[in-house]
Length: 400
Image (cartoon, rainbow, N blue to C red):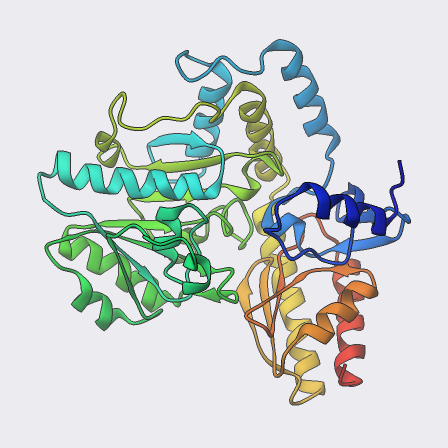
């Protein structure tokens, strides 16, 4: 069977629903911070599967864990006690202030669990008839109907009416609007510490602390979406730790099992009272293989100090990109982010630059039409960052 790019593209047209605008690439294999296409062309990966393969592609240690666990136990369902699941819970909870975990299969499911436990805690434990969740413009919380409603962007909701009710969206960064938006019907606030799809827009310290303060004053739950920002990406193990926040609920996924489908909702002991047997569930969440892999991922992140590495490399990279902007006025409006979650905001539409970078062997993506989003594996080298910076500067100097 042919494995040329054109042949793969034709097979996909025949076999798969058209839900993705594919990049002009077919990837055959990966290794660390490198990807290779079917012609064996090498690419420096600055996307890591959209902030997923944080410890690099095809780690031998993870392959060993998968193989060993697959020979021991794969699935029995969550009707049974499972040691692997408990070991994972102990390790992930040790990285933060939360007390309890619920494991699932994806980021959207983690946000669904956050929304459900928020509403059920407020209604069943606190005895308030409230269920509205406040979110912010520019958000992206997932593709299920509830998380599309939480996201609040028409392009994601188009054609899926009726969209679930119970969500209110206010302007990003506007604390006065948040104060005004909270009513007796409000159950909680859900916010990304750094908006990823929204163009790498970080909360400021004042905004972050202000959201937490308002939630405390109003007696509603403070929830953070760390699906993209979590697991060492921003220079801290969790992005909310950048601002010393203490959310009631957190969702995470993406990098948790380094490419295998795993998500989690973490919460305080008090908020965990919102769930009881039968109120929420999942068939596949935290099966033995996934739990064993995710536990190993956390071990590697802690042992290799990847949060610290992300902080150092991120500072280095952002300084390089800012210097490019200074040398070539009118090309880069802003460089923003934390750790290795970086947005290079171009002065003009970035499609031509993005396409040229891919052609030169750099995989990244373009969001909000002019933001080059860089979320590379946390094991990437300075040399790879230097190579990307040289290519970017060359293209911008030529007005590509």
